[in-house]
Length: 151
Image (cartoon, rainbow, N blue to C red):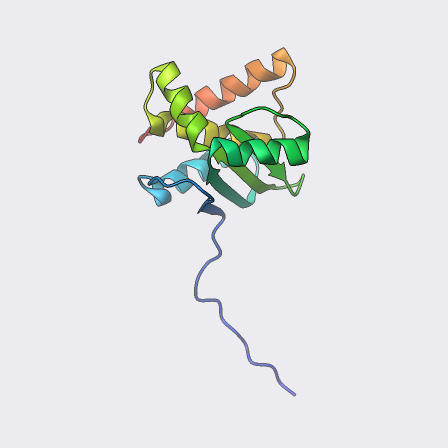
């Protein structure tokens, strides 16, 4: 018995965008994905798959409580699935991003890009719990934002 050869017609996406209870438009998904893939390449890491899930403060707070036992709002939570490649889910509160952008005096798109690359860096193995780790993480965020032509 011979099995038919099934050709894949569509390449599997490495970076995906989902919206839980958030409604806003990502200006150019292809451009944003390309920038994130270049950031991963600069970190000398291969991307298997990243799922960016945009949600509200309340939704992300519930995730924070359920999975991390933290009862507070945050802008981003990452769930890595593979230590060899960048592979995981990045939950982002659009409410926090808007508030942080206003506080920092930057555009929503700029702050969203910062939080997205922050999540990618977590999936790449960076941590920000210790002061010296936080400094290194911010340096890498700034480096990548410096190479962002649209944010």
